[in-house]
Image (cartoon, rainbow, N blue to C red):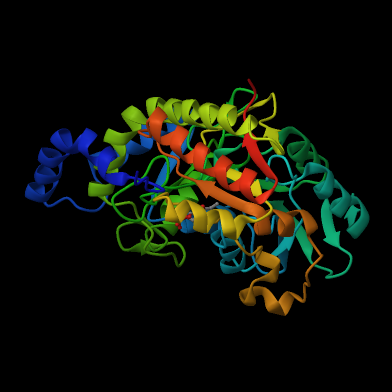
Length: 398
Ligand SMILES: Cc1ncc(COP(=O)(O)O)c(C=O)c1O
């Protein structure tokens, strides 16, 4: 059996008939940038995320960068995030002119550990109550915000993070690039901070046919600033209140996203069903430890990730069996060459490092069949039992 890690062709076939005339009409009208498709998508995606404003952009990275900038993050500031994420999270902080600061992740959720965040704020920073400024004592920079990442479609434990933000006047920008439709205590990912940032990279749960992204926010002024930033800082055509960027969502991508958005809840549900089946099958493997999805979380399983001691051996075994897998992510950011100037060493963020060595992403998409999942789980079992390795799976509540 051949099982790809992700199959975008099967998803395309579901929207093909509706999409083709739509794209033709956009081409015939010649309205490629902005226009009714973009406006309608923004309205529909804001509603999907629980209300407020949506600003369509050209990538998730720009969504993060512009959201930080619009929220007043810039030079001299620090933003707290995690080393166990895709580099776009920290690129956005640096490109906004600020510096990323890391706190480790929780080994069960693989997301920001709220206890580590509080420890950083209370042990390494000083809060000046008169200026309401939090200053990192070792760098002397102002800590301006927190950037939690809802990784793998799994929502971060947000309440304790929002409590820290409240106590110390910090801005919260959510990286929801992998979490379209995920919920925390009933609240949609991306709706809990000042702004939620989404990527519509083709492989995401809601994916365009190229690069695309968006910010969702209830803050009208922030949304207005984002609209200027995406369009060269102009408030009206050729009148520029500031310098901005070419950061718009285009009409063809918006049309694709609108068609897929109608199906997203069903697709997310199917991913959850698939994850539950994986959970059940892998829980039967001796030596397997299942990490439960917290009671308050509803993951949308952008990725289905297991932990295994002999990860490289298992990956090769699955490849020989025709199964595609991925590593998300093999090296934590604090150990990347790009951040060598920060001076971190192995051991500084042990939970992230341990995850990076053991994580393996198994095939996950809505259209996976029961037989395919059984085959993958069977091959994992075969290898793990054969090699005596220990596996841990991320699992949702029963
Ligand atoms: C966690 C995370 N943040 C940010 C991004 C950046 O999104 P984009 O690739 O659309 O710029 C991604 C996408 O890969 C992501 O997974």
